[in-house]
Length: 246
Image (cartoon, rainbow, N blue to C red):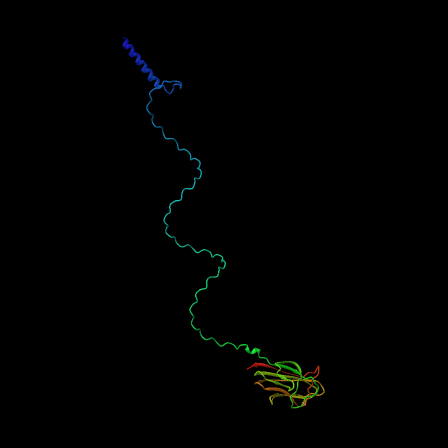
């Protein structure tokens, strides 16, 4: 009887232990009695997708990547707009002298140079007397207006050529009577002019172009009609000048 009584007592204790284990979750935290761990529960159902979080801060730059192989060259692009002209660069080194070119064709003959422009011969002389000149004798014009190269010889009443060429000679004479004037080259009469007038002042003129050689002489002379004046306000002048030198 005592043995049976003890077995009942042990069984009661085990029953209490099982009951305590099944009520472990509801036991107060102060209970120091721990039951045997139970079996793991079944996995629960998947929860709903959560919302995206806020963007994170920019990270630090990573290390340089390894060099890759160059890609295929692309097609040529369209030409851009022309830029502004740049500044003039420094002068470059002088290049090597090139080969001598072929001789060109002969050009056309040029105009005559102006070397003859330095050749001058001209005079303008006037009479300073009211006396009529003697016939067939060179008329002396003793008042110098101009005498380039001094080729009009006053004491002779003649122009003496020093520069061969083409010359123009002309006279303007005041008279109060009949007047005939001849232009003489050396001793040869080239032209003559006459004017008839009575008791009034008259101006007559005459001129000629002559081809002269060196030392040729030109002068004026009158005939019997020799009324030539030479006073202030009634001048008589003899002019000549070189047109073209030879």
